[in-house]
Image (cartoon, rainbow, N blue to C red; front, side, top):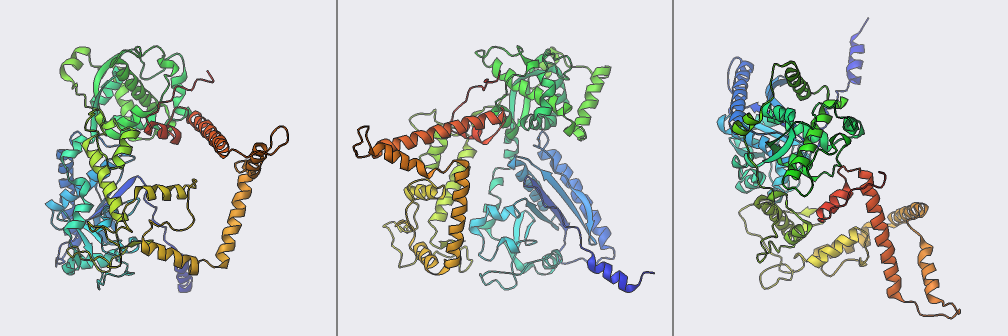
Length: 605
């Protein structure tokens, strides 16, 4: 017989199942109905549910108006009613893959929802946490750390609102906020909010061109594809995203049907081709174009000659897309997905005669022929390097263009923020420190710091050469100095000295020595670290054939070492490219950034 003691013991051993972590490429959002002050109604649950259903209908109308022809990279925006701990709310999760713009489309929709419903409060986060705070990191008060940010950041009436601690002293805050506490503050303490124009502008900076920018997240291109593929995409343009991803993350199993020389078993045979306009996400189009993909056996001889442009480019892109659809329908990994089942049903209708393929006349007369400019893809290593150095475009040579205006603006903003951080007189090893948060107050300058004629702090100014030297030190490259540089800010040099004198004790020194010995032993075992190599070179260079000692040529020795290093680098790079097997990888990405295009690896053919 179960006693109260047994029940108490069971409860003491029970632990709730932890909530799974949010994936890195997903955004999660919650919508609550929190009127202020709290309503004195008899059936608050029914009232809340009715209002949330109204919000759900508004969200559907917004999606239809703003995203009529939009294509999501993976998943779309959706809101579902849920109930937890007696609280009814709307929630959703969108997996945006590599398309960061999809995440900001979700933010825009939620922000518009709060403008239409004044009592709606929205929480949103991704794998990085409160990413709106990350966007506005340079303008936040000192107390607002990630550890205490949960349930403090909300969107209401289109504004970003942050719940302050009870005593806003500007110092570190340890007070964490639960959802019931945040709900009570929202409904009963409206004065507990920070509503800063600067923070809001920074947090929503990426939305400055919305809703116009929504259409600019897509790219239309003319491609030559099998007629059945064109029919599928005309029925539902959203099929393009899973097909591109199936091509982009392909594996040997997915490639099996394409390796057969006989293409009679293919679902999308390369024998009835049409040139149509296809709408991609920008990320998806870049993924498709950037992949080195040898022509499979089933497509051999089906492409026009390479020198026939633009026919060859359109046919090559169409071949990649058709192969993506083929792999999507063949790979067992995708068979349980809804869009795969939908496509198979449409293809069955074609096979049974319930649907008919479009004729050339119908395509020519009724289908769109849009083809967008691809300048946004034109980013070379030289252009990127020039932009990072702040030199901008080459005005004398108009050919040196760097992507589109949006890419240039975002990059310039990143560089400006980085320089601003390096020039911040209040920044130390732990980042920027603020004695008080006052966005309207002037910045006080320390009288002890040396100032240039234009008021810049020389110790904390951005020095390109010093930055390069520091990067080399972190990467273990030659030329690293011993100890702090003269260009290091005075306060940082003092901090380094304090660390050297106080924080590094004998135990730490022994640990560092032991770690060094372990690393040296591991490197010796792999042959990477050969301490005798340098001694052998010195012996050979200091002794002639007659046995007489000669003065070693330091320049030749250095050239020898550089040459060996270059050979090893080239060898490893080629092996890395071979290991990629035509797919994406670090070696291929690095070479493409430098504007280098490697030839096909046909050593095993």
